[in-house]
Structures are given as C-alpha cells and as structure tokens.
Length: 142
Image (cartoon, rainbow, N blue to C red; front, top):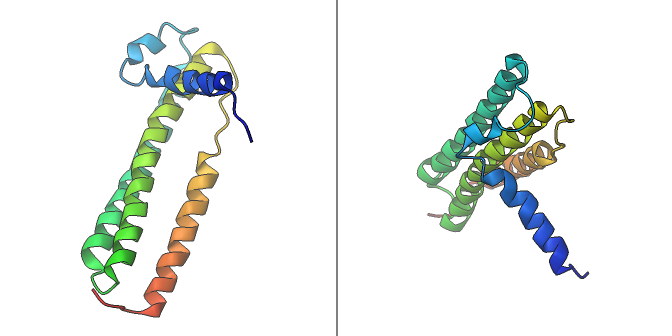
C-alpha cells in the first residue's frame, strides 16, 4: 500500500485546521451564521458528556493502578495505561468533534460523521472482557 505525499498533506491540513480553533472559539463565530442557540448548547452538552466519559476512563485507570495490587504488575500497568490513554484520547476527540460540529451547524451543513463512538465502545468492551478474564484468573503476584 502506497500513500502519496499529497494525500498525507491533505490529511494533515484537515486534521490541523480544526485544531487551530480549539483555543480560539471566537474565530468560529466568523464562520457562517449564528445558529439557534439550542443547537450550540446541545453540541456543548455532548462535548461535556464526552469529557465525563474521559474523566471516568482516566479515573478507572488510576483505580486499576492503585487498587488491583494483586495482579501481576505488567498486567496492572497495561490495563491502567489503556484506560488512561483511552481517556486522554476521548478528551482530545471531544474538543475536535465539538469544533467540527459547531462549524457544521454555523454553516448549515450536515453534522460530520464519526466512528469514534463505535471505536470507543468496542475498546471499552474488549477492555472489560480482558479485565474480567484477569479477575477470574485471580492474583498472579505483585
């Protein structure tokens, strides 16, 4: 599989473009028209729900690291790192999706599709199964 430099540059532009707006929401107001505030507030509530999910994953990671001392250290650290990493990814994805949706709302466009909810659900499900299997196997040292 070959990837052209032009394709990579296009992907980077599309990824970095919204990132410039993360810390400059006033620049979003320059785009399109002012929407009905209910839509912007709903978008913000969705963003905050993603942040709560992120905090829950990060908290779960710290709980695994701190309280599952009966697990083998490598397993415990790996599970904790996956949870904390998933939480960090969820937080970054939340702000990116908020900006993309806000821009679409202001421009009167369709909301951008996202595979992230499905990826997150599958990842959390697989991690839950892994943790269940590790718990059933019992303590393996510390």
